[in-house]
Length: 190
Length: 186
Image (cartoon, rainbow over all chains, first blue to last red; front, side, top):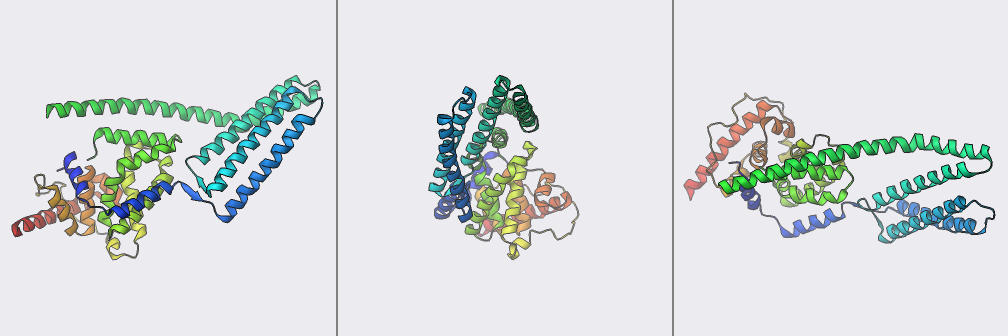
């Protein structure tokens, strides 16, 4: 009763209306896309505008400020790059009128995490190079505390999850290979 | 039931989705769309309703799969979500009210019963299932499609194992009767 062919034949016996099936498939494609609400559009337009203003401001600072340590200038350039990336993302989302959970969510997370990490590394290096040691030490301590509170637990958690994921993936792959092998052997015996 | 390799493949896909590889979700849909539709169709009044429930089911799966710890229970979890979505969709529908447990715990009967349907044609079973009351139809579909254990069916349908055994017994008996009668008429 319960062999695979009966299951497949039962599934085949269920006739499906192609029009309804097609509508479902289209809806499934849109499932991860959230249409922007009017308030969502305002939020995205505002943050894009802020990013544009910041891009201009950081560019101005990076070019005009005299006696700035090289790493300080690099920090401003990083700010410009981050702002430009945010403008591109914002314009794309606004143009499309929807937020794609599959693509945009990952982009925002990577962008923010990458920028904070870069800024932190910059701040620590700059702190160690600065001539005013009091200010330098303050920068290092602030950066280290920020990293201990927000960065380190997230990185440890990510590493542990990654290890668990890799281990489970390897075990499942071994199981899969064994199952495929035994199914192939079973087919040959039949 | 689903092949062992497809079962493990499903777990791997779920693992990828949990790891943030959202594109793997499409693979999960491809693997489970047909059996879940079959089950939902058997719980729905018409096909249009079934497709709406399907959509709601996949939205719930998408939102919940990250929290699923026990990957080996993925098939039962998928069917449980489908059932809950169907129940929610048609709360006013009398047919669906039939699915809500009435609290009766009927005497436990062995799962196999005396009715061997192994030689019966799949088309005949498919036709016969439509003639059964929803409660009986549901447990038989779960048994035929995935070969779930009594306890798994109980956890999906939210009734006791004794009730599942009883429903399976009466469902097989009724299905056998319908098929014999239909074949006799031909």
